[in-house]
Image (cartoon, rainbow, N blue to C red; front, top):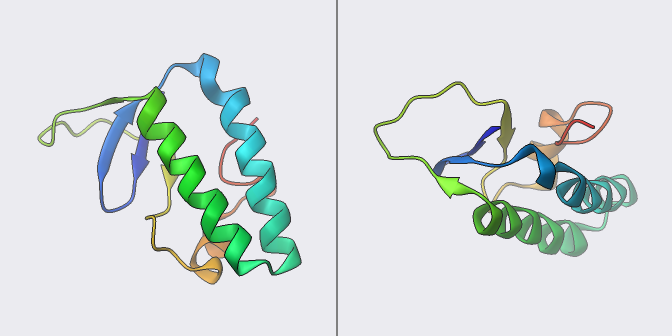
Amino acid sequence: MIVRIMGEGQVELADSHVAELNKLDDELLAEMEGGDGEGFQRTLAALLDKVRELGTPLPDDALEPSELILPAPDASLEEVREMLSDGGLIPG
């Protein structure tokens, strides 16, 4: 799976990591619904760190179609709310 972190680039991530990322995505969604801005920022940072840790960066000149687009680390709660689907940022 190709994942784009807005403002950073793309990483290739094994599908086997989606369940682990979904746990953080569920936390992020709960914090957004509860209006917990501090918790939201902390969990967003943890989610992006996990994607960077588990993924393999693609070269800057690679332009692969992204299957998943994640917000930039400094994205606001409102900006991420606009990106969300019913299931959060990560499908599944």
